[in-house]
Image 1 (cartoon, rainbow, N blue to C red):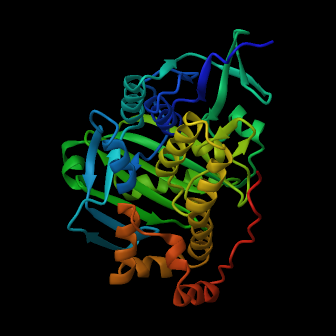
Image 2 (image 1 turned 90 degrees about the horizontal axis):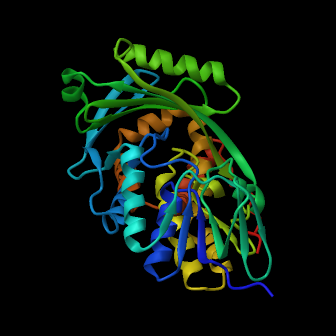
Amino acid sequence: MLGEPEWDVAVIGAGPAGLAAAHAAASAGARTVVLERAAHPRYKTCGGGLLGSSLRLSAERLATVPVRDTISSITFTLNGRREFTRTAAEPLVSLVRRDDFDHAWCAAAEQAGATVRQHTQVRAIDQDEHRVTVTLADGSAVTARVAIGADGSAGITGRHVGVVLEQQDLGLEVELAATPEDRERWRGRVLLDWGPFPGSYGWVFPKDDELTVGVIMAKGHGAETKRYLRDFVDRLGLADRRVLRDSGHLTRCRAAGSPVRAGRVLVAGDAAGLLEPWTREGISYALRSGTWAGEIAAHHQDLSAYDRRVATELQPEMIAGRRLLGAFGRHPSIVHTAMSSALGWRAFRGFCRGDFSMAGALGRPTVRAALRLLGSRPAEVQPAAG
């Protein structure tokens, strides 16, 4: 007869989703281990924008949130044209470097009681009615009552669960050394550029001595994405800045109704394809889904409670975001104009603060009618498995 599993919760991956899960599970008293293939601090391609909800959740758990800049002004452009800037009375977004941010979450998870094993590569996952067995690259195994996958959209846990990915986008970024003039020009302000290809946009995020400049658009247009980034950097007058890092990544968004659990294995964040489809913002989804997964796993609840939480709180927002992406892809100039209006700016501020529901807004008859006129149709949703 097999003995008790070594751990209550094994978390695979030490990004925001995995570390939020580990923090939640360990804080609830569960024996928790995190298996991370790299080592903190490590660079991660990411804009690094924390919405208000992410900042609040992090501030409650971290000794210090390593914020590089606090943003209250947004400059909008339409492929470099029709520029305008809106400024809020309150902070809208906090900007972090992911190596700093993830390292802070790692320290918080360990402080809560989790064991973090770095340089630990996972090769396989198996489960039965009592345990999950995680096989490592060195041939050893880790056993746990529950496993939480947070190893990214191309990781092993998403395949184990059977996550179905529907929307895939390519993001390209450069981290540039900021001159004193750059720091003065961009401090407290980001730029969002609605791009030249359907659904594309670019950004400038200041992070003290660095500028993160990036673009994103649908996968399958690599040459066009590279050209957009090059032209964007040139247009901003930043082509001669020293490039500190140059990287790319794919964002993958789940299909509506795709599973987020198989038996004793839950997936969170990118591993579950959880992100906002229009902006491709993922940190808030990672922190929330990771926290829920860790809490539910630690308390030995009916694990399907996690499926229901995602379906109730995140899936409606993702469906709404996909509809907005459809409208934006067809009519970027209308979206640009909307941001200059009092109503559009109020909605955008609410999104940044984390207290605006896209699903709630799209439930209003006037908004639904406007989206129908713009050619954005409601998604067909299948019930979540489990």
